[in-house]
Image 1 (cartoon, rainbow, N blue to C red):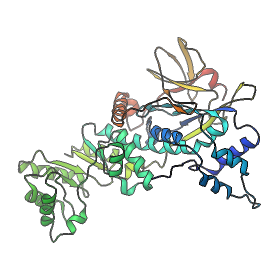
Image 2: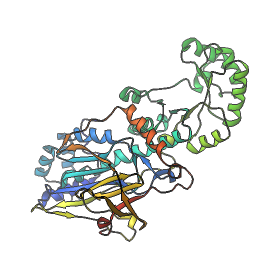
Image 3: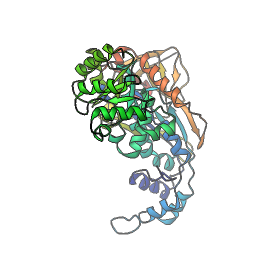
Amino acid sequence: MHTSSLALLTDPYELTMAYGYWKLGMHDLEAVFHLFYRTAPFKGAYAVAAGLQSVIDLIENFHFSSSDCTYLASLCGVDGQPLFEPPFLDFLQKLELKVDLDAVEEGNLAFPHAPLLRVKGPLLQVQILETALLNAINFQTLIATKAARLRHVAPEDEIIEFGLRRAQGIDGGMSASRAAYLGGCDAVSNLLAGKKWAIPVRGTHAHSWVMAFDSELEAFKGYVQVMPNNCVLLVDTYGTQEGIKHAICAAKDVLRAIRLDSGDLEQLSKQARHVLDQEGLQHVKIIASNELDEWRIKQLKSAHAPIDIWGVGTRLTTGHPDGALDGVYKLSAVRNSQGKWRYAAKKCDQKEKGSPPGILQVRRYADGDAVVDVKQEDAESLVAWNVKGEKRQFSGEFKEMLTPIFRHGHRCYTPPPLKEIRLRAIENVQKLPLKISRFEDPTPYFVGTEEVLYRSF
């Protein structure tokens, strides 16, 4: 899907800043950036971390190819002169990343203002990674969170990601399928994702199969003939009630499920269940699709619609109604040529728009997260303040959430299998208190910055 080099998967200003650092002799100064998000998606209170595998792949394969540098050499300023001089492009072509990366592992929960990534290394290198890191983490975390919400409202049901045809391009479709499975879906309809990541795949037939035959009954009989071991029939091409009868007539001995894709899903599923049960087909599942999301599924389950399997497409793979996670990447520390660290904070009249200084770690306690300077020694307790100015004292055992992934450009972390990551995500959401996991007016999870850092931004 990609060329061997993704170094140009970035914005022009990353390269103009990199050029500036190089030109001014600042490129090798050590620096630290943190990636975090400010607002939980879908009016919720949490997110499921995803996208780290893409980050690992990016860093391990990062290089500027000769064709990349040839392209950069063709870029000109408003005066018609090249933006970058040849020695800088030679520098880029020889560049090898020497960064340290620490990250929240995929499948763990992430909360507003608590870093998901900490990137440390030469200033030029950690700068040019910004756009690609945000691209990987923001989208996949959004989709994994959407899938987790689906799993939350249908914990015992099968959920299938159906959205490839509505996804945002090839990579959007692939990333969405992986993130949807990671967040809690059972299967996807994307065969390429199934092959690449060993994700279970599901699929039957479309309306066009039925329309290609002279009658619906003939179409169903033909499908039974060619797919007796995967007999799931879409019954709403012409009329759902007649479609159910035709499905039973054509496939009673091998029918595994029927799919409803339009109309009043509550009433149609109840009618379908009644007819199937009358025919002794209690084992036959009912699949529903058609513009589903967590709210619609919640509504249908509250109405006791006898739906066993949910096919969720557009509203999952596009992260509807949220277009994006608002992740940002902020500089927090630079070490000068004398080896002394200068902490940098983004200050703003709105505290929630600022970013704390330092080299940060996230400590997860039983009652919230505390963002601390990694050099801070363990203490029996600490005081932290959230962006609303609320204060909390933390004590007891904690877990450090940012795990070492790369050291000096070399990977020191082996990701667990995707199936394990998925189970981790499901378990973590299940453990959330209802006041935080609920959809209506959730209580914000407390994330506080330790007092000294808080007062500096």
